[in-house]
Length: 423
Image (cartoon, rainbow, N blue to C red; front, top):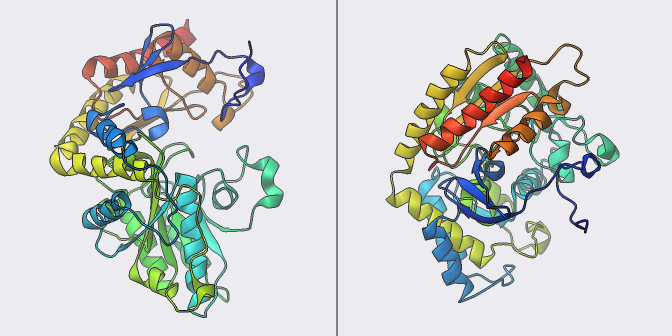
């Protein structure tokens, strides 16, 4: 019987088999046909400490036995209050207000609306949003608008609003990026906000740029009074080697978006953190100036309990040491595989390792639609490894608990794929 499920980012017309997962544990997925599959991509970058972490699972079970969903407009509950307090305690002190939503995309939508609402409410409306070339911020209308235009959103172009695009800072063109940002921030129509993925552009191909450049971009925005939005949905919670990528540039954004690792990857939850200035612009005895955003499941108590447990793990366990150790182990394996002639541009930031595989002559597509991606994904599947390349860009971003044997299996799978292409 054909499944009625329509899977995301899946071309069902290709007829590729879709495995059924029945159990998760640590760095592995266990399938209905008895396989143990190494999760080399943290199940789309969400799983940090490992699948089914006992402390997080216990918090979910305890909360589920007490209270499920309640309305959050004008009501509250202890898991949300506790989580907000814990977040404010661990994040930069300027980010003193926590708004809940459900996913990375909604966290960014909230940030965009906060920015526009800020300018409208202080009586100096600004409307232009700036973004960095090759960015990806989600698949809702607002997030697609501030992301790279292309195969991801070509069909939906009539729905998207115009933005200013700052060229990506290629290694030999940093000044061009800064000059463009400076020009777009100012002028007769100053920008409202600049949104950026700090240090690494994820879905855009794991493109890296240095902390000093991030700091300079924030400085330019501050000079022009342009709000700085940091989308740390992927980069947060240790992926780049620090709790936040922004730490490495010693900057604090006006608005910060977090999700994915917020609950350790266990259940959906997102937050958008904002400064006093953003919050105060919406604070009034005039109901027309409130922040008009919500979803039915805002601040779900079970998800909040999972996030509280995650912050407890960060507080009580040597998470940062695990991250540093994984980064070193990734680097050692990246150095070895980088000697293969088909590997280009090997790079690592924190626990993220990435590289490109050279196209064969006469390839039909480059970039995201490169045939390398699905070919390697299928090959990895036969070797009980979960990889999901971004076209010809391969990345390894496992849970922090992954052991050496599993990490060797991941890089060994890529190596066998490369050798198979040469034979």
